[in-house]
Image 1 (cartoon, rainbow, N blue to C red):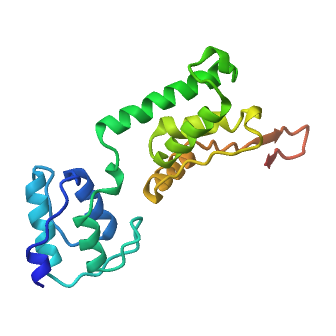
Image 2: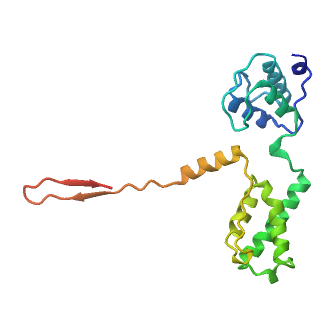
Length: 192
């Protein structure tokens, strides 16, 4: 019980991050969107003093101790500093430029195919960034990579969001054929 009173939620968790955790884990925390980050911190700490039933979640957190451990460490969604993210974005732009110029290395700053692959191997660990996913997709079409495939590392939460977006984009195509009656025969409808 003592650890809960002195628990410090890592500063990399934003108000929105904390609310997502509360919702996803089904925690009994009553909050308002008018609450600031500190208010949410305090309400979450109060909640952690009680016995909790944690629902199945993206974070793979199963009990209160795992939740406390997760909140005390740096937010996994924010592992990049602004400077590091800028660097990742610059590399993405260089790789996309290479891909858009028909995979011609002579129109880029790259000196070898190995340099491109090394940059891609570095950035693919940040698969929650849309540009990284795009780079991997484009580079998988490059025949000069010798059959290498690049799969971005995507967090379970982001993967669920991507799956939901994909479902909403799917077009349901139902067709119906109408055969009109001639004389005394009935109208017939065919559904595919």
